[in-house]
Amino acid sequence: MSKLASWVLFVSFFGILMLIIFAIPRGFDFSDEGFYLLLSDPFQSNKAGIINYDLFFKLLFKLTGLEFGIIGIRVFRLLSYLLGAFFLSKAWRNIKDEETISTIVFLISALGLFAGYGFLPPSLSYNSLSVVAVCIWFLGISKRNIRNQDLFLIGVSFSILFYSKISALVGLLPLTWFLLYKAKISWIKIWIIMVPGLFLEFLFLLTLNENGVSRILEGLSRNAFREDYGIIQLIRYSAVGPLWSLIVFTPIFILAQILKSGIVQQSVLYVISLSLVLWISFITKMADSWVHVFYHSALAVLAILLGNGGFKNIKSRERMIFCVLLILPYALHFGSNVYWFRLGIHYIVFPILAICLLIGSDFKLSNSRKFLIPLYSMSFLVCLYGLWISPFEGVPNWKADKSWVFNDGKSIQLSAEYIEFLKEINSEVNGYESGEIVSLYMNPGILYLLDRQSPEIPGYWSESQASNFLKEEKLGLILYNGLVEFPFASEAWKVKRVLTQPNGEKLEILVKK
View (cartoon, helix red, strand yellow):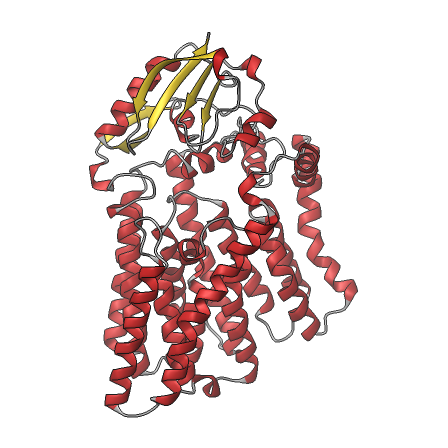
């Protein structure tokens, strides 16, 4: 790798690390992050849960008394990403038959994982856990001869996916079966994959009197799924990613084959590719997020390298790994109700590693300068945008300069408007305990910062959830933002007060008549 590329890599890595570390005690998102934090609360109920990684936190609390707060959960995510980068660099060593782990590959992998901070809150989540789980899975399948310990690793990754994002596990199963079939693994040995999951299920049942299977079965019996997770919607969401990826990739690949040589031809190729990436990014943009430009750019680089014959420069086994890397983002996205080009940034580490395979283990000078330097820089910009300039559902983090103290002395730095809102609402909920207050809809973080838990489940996103789980007679106060239909008879409740949330939405405080 050129000195310039190496320098940009190291600066980008440590720059992003500082962005993450200094953002850890700042800002908060009432919606998704509130849901994540309630899942980490050992006292929060999660009836009929589909996302069940809270079982780990409940088990840890029961065995040790250890409880995570906002800062602890954010540190946990950072450490898990660094661990995921370590797994990927070990897998690279196996693929390339190298004796030592490559520091360059570790840093590149970390930059790819850090890009996940560009969209959604910075706390540990089912999306960040699923990406790290697949890093473990990738290490398990990376050896030429897959052994029992590698199958066990695959089982560990499957267990994490089962409790964090079961739809991603479903998406990964066909690919796993194909790879194990190609590796000629016997059916008897494949049972090793089941060991970690069975152990955890028995452990949870023994210590907590519930486990992942019991919750899923309860969810099926109660028909408690959200409307936006219907099978037709999920198929449509899952099809969007491959479709638009091909729309970006195909014309650039064809053009790269036509303009293979010559400085002028290559300059024309880069200008047209950049124009196409920006145009498609514009027409696929949702809300104010632009981080999907990064994924489009990675697809464009892949198209240029492949169009210039890059596939011929890697070994046959590496070609299979290359294909696996390209498939993984779509397997991970399977079953998600979030738009592909918003969520895809979490999975960009895999196409980045595919680019590295095409460039070669020696990271040739011309390609490392032309392609890797822009990718490093974009990773830094994505993190800067997602953590500081426009945090998910929040205000810029440099405005988070006032302390909010909650939960026996724990604190978080928030902006003045957040502090004022929380003070106003705290005065209204005094006298009500957890279980008597519910926050509707998509804003469970309000309860978390008021030292309360959400009744029955960590958060309510739909009217069917509220109707299915909530018992009106047990409620004394409802925080209602009007985004979804009110689940009870409105004549039984009266509006006591109307507040304005920091994001501009109105929040009604309702009490029984």
